[in-house]
Image (tube, rainbow, N blue to C red; front, side):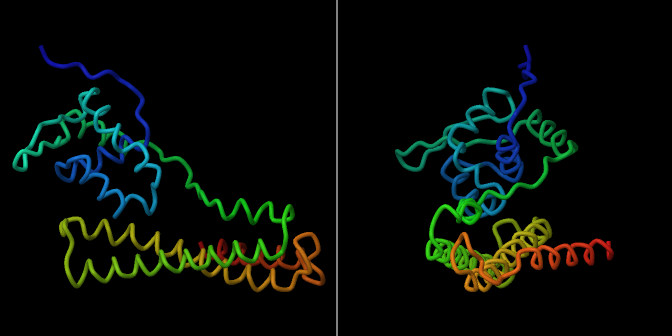
Length: 216
């Protein structure tokens, strides 16, 4: 009797893992390494559930597991099933949720008036340094993919499209942190911006948004 797959609602992380399994077979360790290399840039939550997700996909009939041995050492190899490919294809046809930015540093910026100006300045300095470091890593990845090749050259066109968005986001964050540091440097404290004009900054932002939208 054929196995009947239950119509269980799956998380986006489930489909992220299914997507990786559609590329090739992986052990859980290999999946974790690949997530660290690729998905972490735009779906960091995937890594947290990674070790449970393949088992759940097997239980749902969307993947299958088999044992492989390296000497005496055993590991589990996961591969996608036809049902898994069908589920992945159906998910690709569904509307996506809106983009979300998760940034602890921005929470600290938003509630900076609960602390001191030096605290806010340190938060912005760290955010700038971290953004620059991520941007360097993306640049190295982009250069290596061309000069040294990639593990999946047949998917280079997909990687090129995805990589550009992440780089643009990091560039925008880096530009913003440098702008914010210049503005904050003019404040007297986190509760007193001195002669710095918040309405002026907001009007300037509104004009920038209108200019961009006018060209769409």
